[in-house]
Length: 307
Ligand code: ADP
Image (cartoon, rainbow, N blue to C red; front, side, top):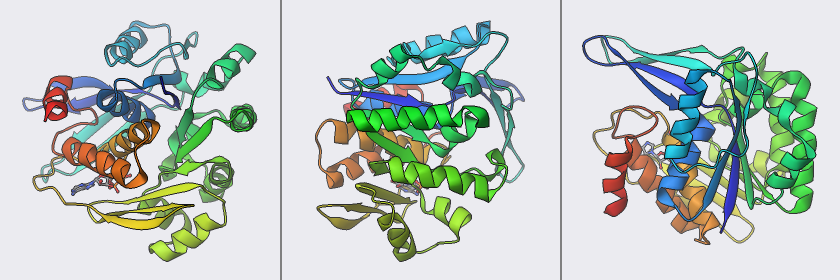
């Protein structure tokens, strides 16, 4: 059985419903990726690596991981901490804005739980996935623990997958983000950025500058998402730009990139080609954006999977 570990933070999500009531769910980029990967490829063992608190909300969150069949062996409990929280507000024009309360969240402690046993377990994985958000969430003082762990995993033969998912507000400044991302680019075997990650951080908005930049970092497999336009793929064997069929009736693009990553990595783990894996990623993402919220209700998704 193929096995993947994903490091990240799952937060409590509050979103407004008609009538002013708040709906509560759970989301976060790496977690969203884990959910869609598992829903698409139930035969892959998907494990989430994070820290939650010892409170009831954390218990409920872990129960929801389990209900998605996501492995929780590496979900640790930090004393006196609670999960991060964010709220989605929608203005009169339908524009969404996000407010976060995550500065002291339990997930920031994850590296404190890295023991020899944890390293041993992660070494059993085929792939280890993290994002720029996973990186930003780690306490700055713990970052060296993370990079030592990455070195060990890479030397053991675990494939490292990285989505920069740049969020300016999570970093002290661009320089801090760039230093960490450079290390991630050099370490990663598979990189799954969106065009905007490069535009915001490096000022590149065309594929050729991005290709040149990534070429200098020795990335084996580079998959660049460009919204409804195309997906650019570069690997040792091939360079190809795959057109995306735009879907109509987009409701909410939250989690488009995350669900694409889940579909893509699941397909690659199951031995599909790059082009076929892009098709899986694009199909899942194209479905997810037709629904509100990061995680489409499981019942709705089951129907999609049966098609
Ligand atoms: P991110 O969320 O990382 O910014 P993108 O906006 O590039 O990612 O979208 C990720 C994927 O979602 C795209 O590669 C594509 O497969 C799919 N996607 C996004 N927007 C559309 C759309 N309008 N129609 C069809 N697919 C879309």
